[in-house]
Image (tube, rainbow, N blue to C red; front, side, top):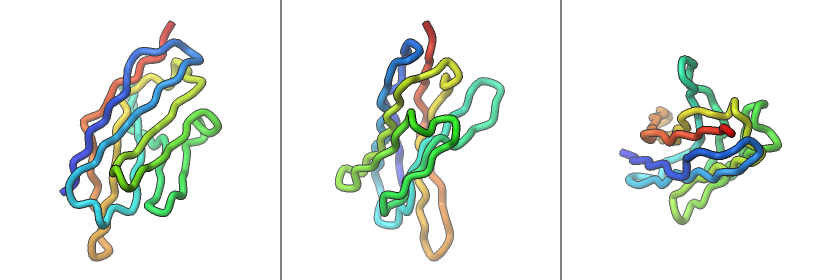
Amino acid sequence: QVHLVESGGGLVQPGGSLRLSCAASGSMLSIVAMGWYRQAPGKQRDLVATITSGGTANYADSVKGRFTISRDNAANTAYLQMNSLKPEDTAVYYCNAVDRRRRVDYEYWGQGTQVTVSS
């Protein structure tokens, strides 16, 4: 089992920055990737960024060049640095971890943290 806790959300003006953190606990040895997803009201949950255990990052086109995902393996924590925020970035942001055991992937989710971009 893996337990994820997000923090760092809040209200920010357009053009501002926020840094989200995702603290993971539990059985971390077989975690192959961590990521961030977001869900705006009335919309589906979409991928924002992922990072593998080897450090390879992947981003949604809408956040490339503005967001940076990173991971501190020693601290079992993933981060999402969000710069140049836009109103359309407003959403609940969820942390995700993929646990691969015997070639089967198990996904874990945090409870989410609200990010609101508004003047």
